[in-house]
Amino acid sequence: MTANADQVRDESKRVKIFDTSLRDGEQAPGITLNTREKLEIAHQLRRLGVDVMEAGFPITSPGDFEAVREIAREMEGVTVAGLARANEKDVLRAGEAVREAKSGRIHTFIATSDIHMTHKLRMDRDQVLAAAVDAVRLAKSIVDDVEFSCEDATRSDVAFVADVVGAAIAHGATTINIPDTVGYTMPVEFHAFLTELRRRCPSLDDVTLSVHCHNDLGLAVANSLAGMLAGARQVEGCINGIGERAGNASIEEVGMILRTRAEDLGGLWCGMETTEITRTSRLVSRLTGYVVQPNKAIVGKNAFAHEAGIHQHGVLANPLTYEIMDATSVGLAQNSIVLGKHSGRHALSHALTELGYELDKDELNAAFVRFKDVADRKGAISAADIEALVSDEMRTEGVEGFVLDETSVTTASGTNPRATVSVIDPQGERQSGEGEGDGPVNALISAIDDAIGTHGRLLEYHVTAVTGGDDALGEARVVCDIDGRRYSGQGVSPDVLEASAIAYLRAVNASRRAEDADVTDQGV
Image (cartoon, rainbow, N blue to C red; front, side, top):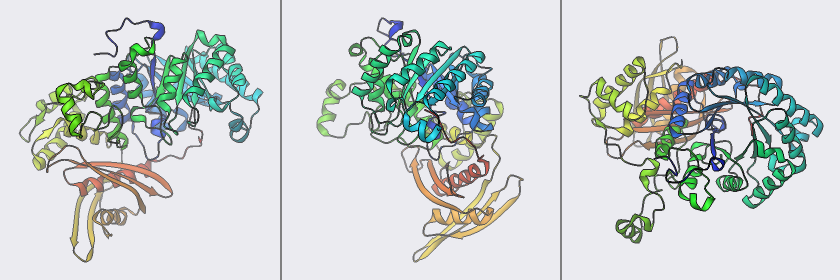
């Protein structure tokens, strides 16, 4: 059911959902998504019903450009945006990336706060105003849909922001975004800022006013709500609230606020298909490696769990005693798919279709090989297992790098664990190594380093079970320092040590693929 389906919908009250998980979300430390992973997330965002997806920052690297272009080619029924700083090179690159989109948008921005202008841009107000106008004018010559953002708007002089956005609108901007870039403002302040901005710039009533709030003080969603109440009709954020530093507004929380409290919000509504929230959250979590905290609103595993006896009694008597939302409204209904080692390719294909995956013949064949290997070792394969395996395959598709061949770990009381590994290098040659450490995972990393000549340092290590039970698939995530930069990797296997070795190898592969980019300013 689409949110607020029982409401009489006033189009003037419609709030567009702008998802930037693929751009701002990917800027979070340790997240590196390949094109296949980005495409899968993009298709799921489309099923979720977002209005706009910001697919990337095309100028930053050839890989980001290609991902934006591929997403733009494939998406229908949703606007695909590319981010660009307010300069000719960025805008042209973003325009080329979204050129083939059915509905393409260039999102250009420049900072308007005195602290940014003085210390980062080294520009005065007249120069910033001129750069904004030039960027919007150029973007408008490429696409009809142009968004302009005043970076660090909430720490800017509202009079100057009014001048800049007024000029941007006059030269063709169709959406004006007011970001709380550093997550500093509070809801009452943000509401007052936007109210004053609209008073000073009446032309804002002729375009879409947008808000983009960061979560440094834990107020991103609250500030987004204040923005909507002040007239914003687009909210920007990320699935699971991922993003730079403390992250962005959680799009799933915004959607469920609009659904659950519609009557108290003056009829504000959005087109989000809320039953796709849980699946979207799981997919983004798996592919980014960012685990969702158990008590996270809407999508945390405890969001609909009740431990206290008095709560359990109340929920059994009437769910409304402690549940303000129906779990099925966010897609939490259990999927009954179970496959085994005797299941064939057709059964797997049918299960994948039910789970929302769209795989071509080669992708299905690769998934089937992996499925049969795990089924032989594990037994019954659940829907959650299938999702984990397919997500894991996306991490390697079309990516050249080292592949784990064999591992062996020996442990004994009183001695450090020792490990031996063999890996297949990008040329297809087998390389072997040995190592020891103060634990089996450290020993495996040491052995991999010995095999391929790397020197990684483990910064974070997480292992989770995909499902319950003794035979659950293990999902490992590592964050490593390799040559002074952070890289992450994930791996899935019935053997958690094997999953850990796979995860580390993928972090190494990410370090080998990394391209030095000149861009240091990553957006609003």
